[in-house]
Length: 100
Length: 434
Image (cartoon, rainbow over all chains, first blue to last red; front, side, top):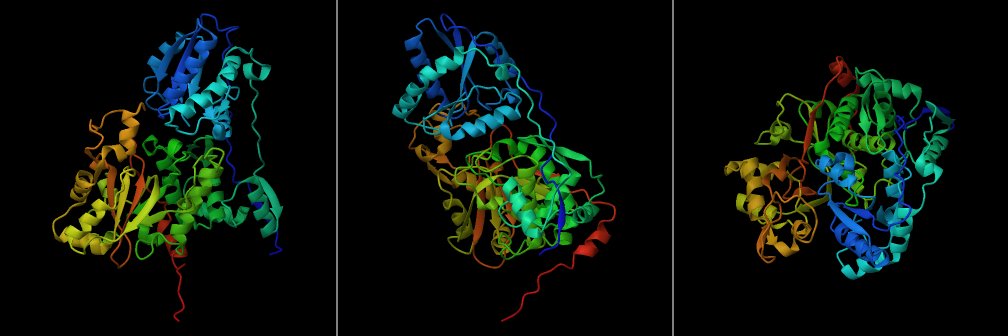
């Protein structure tokens, strides 16, 4: 049991993932459109409905636009990616709810 | 992004892995997958001010231009005694909790005799970390698991199954559902490796069944970067993640084997994967075909209908085949007759209570109407395995959606296969009689 073992590293190398910053935030929410992105899990839509209600109470001029993902929360894997990108152009910021 | 508080670390890891470490993640207190509006209201109302702040707060330098956090580790990572190596690996989070075989240069070199692929060849990048599954990294993890060099072709094919999007490894591998890979081995390689298909095939004791599954567990962890409670959010976890490997008992099966159903030739060697989270065994309601089929049908619970492998011992398979049943007919019959009121079916709830689940399957309008537990007979595979005795089993996975299914890959053998098999095949347990 006292033999010495020189061992190789089992942890894989990974190419660095290209990093992206997040989009600039609006300075304030007056008159802005907030995108609500719902994952496919059941709770995501009602959570976002409550988010809309709560924000609307605080910022009466806010508008909202819902995007429902039937599939993934990862937008790069969406089959309706074109539809998503079009939706994204019409909003000033996005709140996403996973449902977990 | 709003996530339940318990998933915050997972969300951060996922965001970093996708190249957006600055994503603003707001932990909230809505119970996971909540169906109660009062709790959703309470959890969200506490978070609304924070949401408003996160929507408008100017970006920090790090959020605007995140910096890479890649640590290159040396190829030779440690030197020490058996115990020291094991403690080092455990502290790094590189083991499965059991002692590992030290992956020395010599041991890895021997493992690499099991493949013709060069050590630096990349079989693929395993999600979520997109770790490079080089042949050498596969071999290192195989050594740690106690595998023999002859298992390398199976491990390589098994990784190929995980890379196939139809297996949904990216979802099942990290899901709260604790889905565990179930590896089913077919073709001549079963015999070459002595993969158990008979009595207690899923119990500990056979090196091939134990080490192949264990090696894949370490590969998923150390190459894919799936760590319990960080990326793998399985609520309860799953002991099958240590190893769940079986061979089909093709010799005693009256039907064509699984890999042939999956489109390969009988003489091919193959590995099939799917991700069950439950393994259930039950006695039939009689030893004749009627009793066996009734047992198969009535031992499904309403909330557990998804991709399913029925494990039939030769006794049951041959009784059914003797009365004319084919694998497809058994699957169709189970799907037709295993029913429960729709209101008890999780799938029905997903579709009708607001999930965006694709609606390619019809569900009843009346929640009390009897609904199929397994919506599609193609979600079922029949595998003949197990020893003498009057029980059968089923491994039950998630409903198939977006093309998710059983994935089978051919095992490619190295040129010196026969010689290799001869070298390692005499490793057989010989039990003392008492």
